Image (cartoon, rainbow, N blue to C red; front, side, top):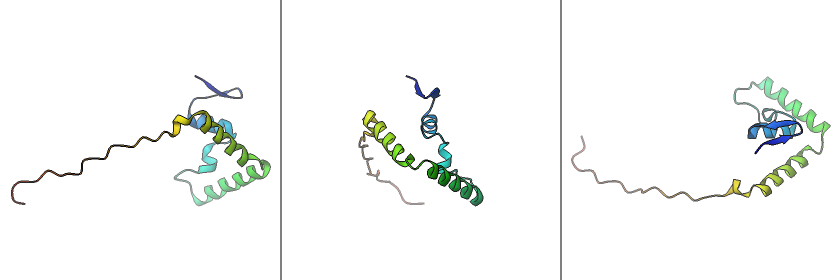
Length: 95
């Protein structure tokens, strides 16, 4: 199944998020190796975008709720079996 946002095809989850937001995900989450100066510039850009689009946070929450509602299997939690913690008895003297 193919997913399109407007005329653009989303090939991965990151593409889908970027196309839905209209901005790269890294703008909001940052990157691991960014400098203090790059972080400050990124945060300034994010503040400008939010100032220009005051409804953006509400739109994102609505989008996330729709995705969760349409794909409940994404959040199925399956308990994992506990590992056997018994240790085999060692024979012989410690070296």
